[in-house]
Amino acid sequence: MDPQTRKARQVQSLPLPANPARQSQPTIVLVILTVLALLMITLSAVGYATVGRIGNDVASASSLALGDAIAGTSGEKKVAKHGQATDGATDILLVGSDSRADAQGNPLTPEEIAMLRAGDEENDNTDTLMLIRVPNDGSSATAISIPRDTYIHDPQMGNMKINGVYSAYKAAKQTQLLEQGITDQKELIARSTEAGRAALIRAISRLSGVTVDHYAEIGLLGFVLLTDAVGGVEVCLLEPTQDEFSQANFPAGRQTLNGPDALSYVRQRHGLPRGDLDRITRQQAYMASLVNKMLSNGTLTNTATLAQLADAIRRSVIIDEGWDIMSFANQLQNLAGGRVKFTTIPVTSIDGVGDYGESVVTVDTKEVHDFFDTLLSTATAAPEATEEPADTAADDGKKPLIVHTLNASLATGLAARVAQYLADDNYPIGDISNAPEGLYDRSQIVAADPDDREVKQLAKLLGSLPITQSDSLEPGEAVVVVHGDYVGPKADTEYELPPAVVGQPGEEAVDDAPAVIDAGGDGPRCVY
Image (tube, rainbow, N blue to C red; front, side):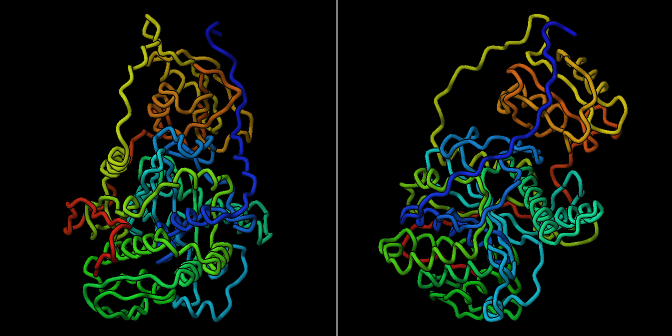
């Protein structure tokens, strides 16, 4: 073994510790509700949404793939403190669920189900998805909607609509657990739900090009209760509308909607000129109006209103267990309505065709990545230029990162082939061996600092492998773990990145930049 190398260590992902519970305060409620409003839509059509933690009663979700690298897996990376994100922003995934149970798992009453106007049957599709970007300085918040039919490539499931990722992975995990002899319903639901949420987070991260730091989910009932708690929300329609599916029946012009009517309003997509894209615009206008109302004087100073809001959150909201909402509240303490904006990812067509002839929304992932980067650069001033770090590569051309390779797959010699590939690219190679059985469940890079430039370059070279942080490694070394899911260089199957555009784009191209709606002004935006 070369004297420059160090012996590979067995490294495992460390679970994120749950933060101690905080006592609720009006300021915290305001922040929670502002973020929730940003994502209220999430719950709108059938999705998940976000909120913050109030006291000890808010349900939390664990075992999520938060803080993962862009390619993401279940290996968890330490999530940066609020205001200290290494990519310049805290990113929150907001999803809406059509669950007929509350956040604590209690079934809704028949009266509550009837109030939702959504039928008796629920499904696992996440039809409303939103990613909220909050720059480190907390000066703004941008909520970006992702159309439900966005067509993506998933490394394990293949090409699919993004709203089906959660349900596909949940079902696959449940089948796997049943085959392992696990029959306890509570455990089956909990573990399969965790798998679905983690897969959705990874898919959103791959599509957006950003690291998802926090997760929030809200049910249909929460949308109704929160809307009613603030006394209804004003909207404006350009034309009258009537839809038997969502039971939306509204005249043109400005009007204030109660909870059930608001749910019908944001769920409607039939009969709108651009279908789901117009529904998203309607949802964004509604949320902007809601945020404007909550940020206005008086709405959250009423103790009865606060009590209703707190009860609605306890019954309907699930957030990740590692979310320090107090810190997040401090980050957003100076946020104003005009700095809360809503927009949609750029799409290439709204009438594309999927692999099985289904109607899909096509996107160019490179354009989506650039879009998210631009959002951050326009929201914050550019940092002062710093000198590029000196090239620490050795004079002989060797890269300044010692790489150990572990084979966690059933493919004989895979670690050796990958090591040789890296050696040919001037990487110093350390140990080459088999990984202890059961230690790793997927391919990954293990390193002391996941944000190290050399580590990121290595991960990208091997097919954008996720990076797992471990304190047991020294700076300047990394462990490459190749598992059965490995499709990078020297895998049995030829490695090929998925195309930027998946599916066949349709004729209705969407070339215009996504519209932006903000929560400022004196009245709601008029929409279809």
